[in-house]
Amino acid sequence: MSLIFSKLKGNPNQFFDILPTEWKNLIVPNWVHYKKTATIYVIKEAHEIICGGIVFSEKLNEMTPFEIEHLHLFSEGYNYLGYIWVVEHKRNQKLASKWLNCLKETHPHQKYWLTIEEEELNYFYKKNDFKLFAENKIDFNNNLKEWIFIYP
Image (tube, rainbow, N blue to C red; front, side):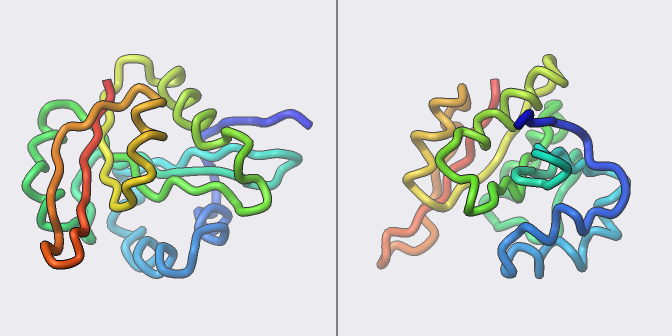
């Protein structure tokens, strides 16, 4: 079955419906503010969205204080990547890497930044040519951290 990478046209709920509830609860109420400056890109297989993410060209309402400290990246030409998701039954097929590669090929001169809060994602983004830009401890007791990665 062939995979198609494309900009999502039409109802954004096609993508929002595959997201975890926690993420959906963040993005859906704010989409009215983002829809003019954000773009959803998806990978479809047989007309079913199996992977996607959102490219933001302006600040998100739900950014953390650490992300807000780095808003200067927007003025330096970076777009923010968020809500990158692969449906569970399609995991471990390198779809998120394919999504990132297709995005980079579609916009070869665009720079990107993103934030992660799960340490195991460090390897994934480094493998996809993102570089660690900043690190922050959120909670010193539990040693929770967040990381900002940039491309290129």
